[in-house]
Image 1 (cartoon, rainbow, N blue to C red):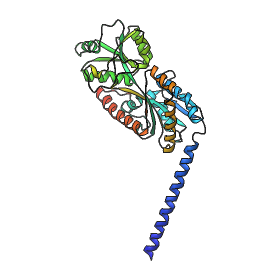
Image 2: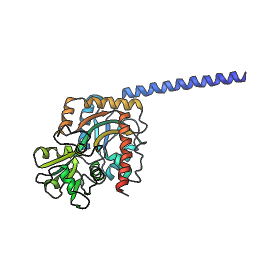
Image 3: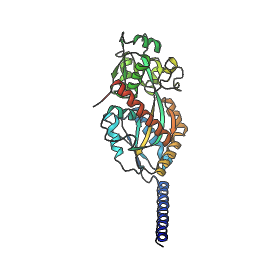
Image 4: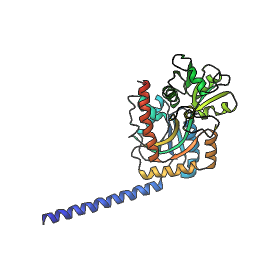
Length: 331
């Protein structure tokens, strides 16, 4: 009798638990269908005017058409993007606080010993918006006509080549270090406070080479003001199809394609994650968005949460190994 009563109690509890779960799921689904009911905040971890900021504002301008509510873009630069990331990590996981980041987000864990957040656990990926390669540029009157010319001059015993990047710990900095490792060269790094200042000094002849985003240099390349030696992506850039990749110039396996994506605080309901992804895909499928991204050198990605998580985790791990190998630490 006792066993029968115990079994009935367990059975009743299971039915109750199942019923509560079903109610909870239905409530979550209803909440997602009503989402959003107010403006969405997109935090950018860099100052206004940069590529990440431009993408966030471009998406935000059209997001209202998909959701019925506007997107408010807020810049919170500082500590290589860590200040903005900390801010969003502490926000409510309700879908109304998003973080716009680029590949630097995956570099920082290997550079900073105390981020005050866990990039793998404190966020959930929503969408990888777009990729943009970096490009190796030299002044138009440079003696380096090709990547091999530059690398021959950059042998360790010669030590005669330096390169500007968009800053310490940026993907462009690491692209140069990856080239040093692949080609067994010694190109000296000169960090700038952004891609723009690095480009300016190449144009002025103050630095013999720079590695900056393709979108930052495309106009000057097309105008013949600078010469592009290579792009860092695995495939050639649609914006500059005549510029060979580093890999096809003798360094197979070399690739660094900078991504830009949106994250949300961990705990954001799966149904709301999906709603956000679906709405953002609608934005990225607009022809005017495709045309604008192409003109800036970006390749739309539209990777969903699972695919984006794999990209994010893989880059965090490989950049951690690279920053350790080159001894790059910020604290």
